Image 1 (tube, rainbow, N blue to C red):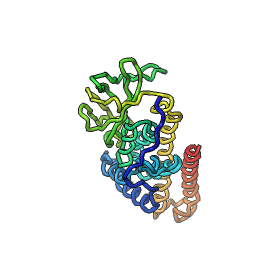
Image 2 (cartoon, rainbow, N blue to C red):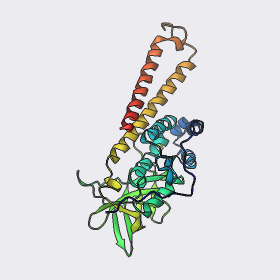
Image 3 (cartoon, rainbow, N blue to C red):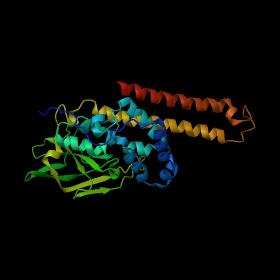
Image 4 (cartoon, one colour):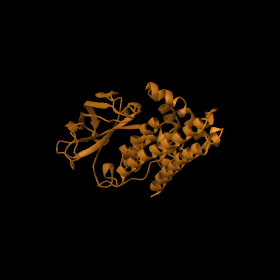
Length: 311
């Protein structure tokens, strides 16, 4: 079994933790027009481009690999603030950061270090794993296939629920070889045979482009495939816990946004009702109590996420 190799040092400047002012400016730019995008279903390509430019997706990479070396707690603190600015944008990055934890953060060979290099340069990784014709409970072997073709493989299959892939540079795909051995590959989205369809019509996630991805005879090099093993790929402990905590962090950010909007609404009110306990809405104890309850819920959600991240 391959053992992790020392992390390669890249020529690119390490991504230092964003200064508070720089992070604030980035989040403000992402928040601008958020409600209009949600209402009109305007995909946030421009906002994702800002994230790529800032190389935010490299937060968890080691400094020696061109990342920021951020802790999981630091990452989730930023995710909460990002979700407060635009929950769709935060959700789009869920799969990217999950993949970074699983297959990129601890490279086991030269190909993995190449994926690490792409992330350090600002690339975003999407995900294509879920299939409509999912096997029975307990069987994780995908129907998407890696078929040997000379020294390479041909990738064929259809995935749905490909959150964030429409905005990404690379995509992680789960498939199995003819013997049923499951594995994953990370390949560029501009490779021949890949088709992305923005056909998500479920409730919520209106802008995450959680649609269908087709793979038709996509050529994949053998070194681009990581077959499941206990210490690499999808065998890494707690990887599913990370993905679920990421969604909880997004919810915590939405709670902060609800508090922000509630405060703005009360402060904007100039009139009240004749039976109100105070002439000024901002001095109304009933409104203060309601805003306080929202504030306490948002604070509790954020605290739980960060304590779980530390664990």
